[in-house]
Amino acid sequence: MGSDLPDHPVCVLDASSYVGFWILKGLLSRGYSVHAAIQNKKGGEATEIEKKIMEMAKEDDTKLVVFGVDVLDYQSILVALKSCSGVFCCLDFQDPYDEKMVDLEVRGAINVVEACAQTDSIAKIVFTSSLTAAIWRENICSEKDVDERSWSDQSFCRKFKLWYALAKTLSEQAAWALAMDRDLNMVSINPGLVLGPSVSQQNPRSTRAAQMFENGVLAYVNVNFLVSVHIRAMEDTSTCGRYLCFDQIVNTEEEAVKIAQGLSPLISLPQSYECGGSEVYEERLRNKKLNKLVEGTAY
Image 1: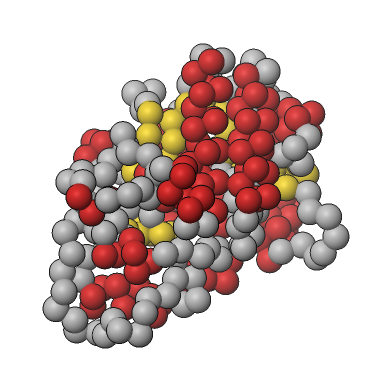
Image 2 (image 1 turned 120 degrees about the vertical axis):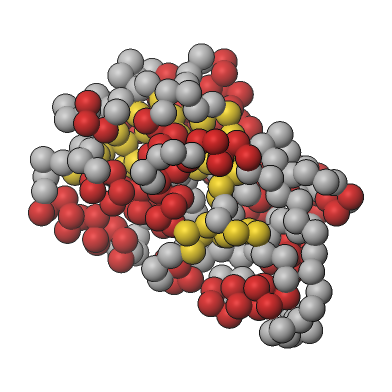
């Protein structure tokens, strides 16, 4: 599909999020023309990612065009999507997440999907969600399989103030409901903890890592693999539904401590965990569907 789109760009919104930026780079390296939609921020200086995107656009304004958007302003999204054949919707907001952020992300997701419905050229939406939209509920430890059919429980997330998980759950569910109502072609990618360059500085995210680990649902994914999955999901006409995306499930104390040390302060574990621990927790995550997607590809 990439080689067939020299005159039909794809849009990345928000290109200034950590995942969005790497998707943008991946698309450009594969020859795509890209509309980089960056959320307008009131006041404050541009982030390092935003500065890099502007520099990239200056170097090649034939392949990369930057748009400022407000996800609550439907018209600004339409401008960024004009003439695009597909969109990577990877909304993310800075920590700390709270109830206000939850509402903002849900409304933003709805506006993006509705704008796609009103843009005749859009053939597909790849929606970036999160593994946290599938793992949080009472008695998760009693479930054998956590896969694409699983959803986090809204009441559980509210009870324990898991605002990030709630935002991802509600925004993805809202996007799916609207996409189905508007008969849009959409897939969602639900990544675990994203590992990559400068991840703890550029991709801050509070998480209950210890609880995820103990319940067998702590997993991570390398950002390069995640980007390949996103692009493959856009290009492959057979893709549908949700895809849990991770490289490795963390189920030993040694692995958990190593990950926590490398991602501090992104995630933290109680001091009771020590390297070389012998405790092993049962893995509950399943991603057979993702494996089928990437089998036999060059990614």
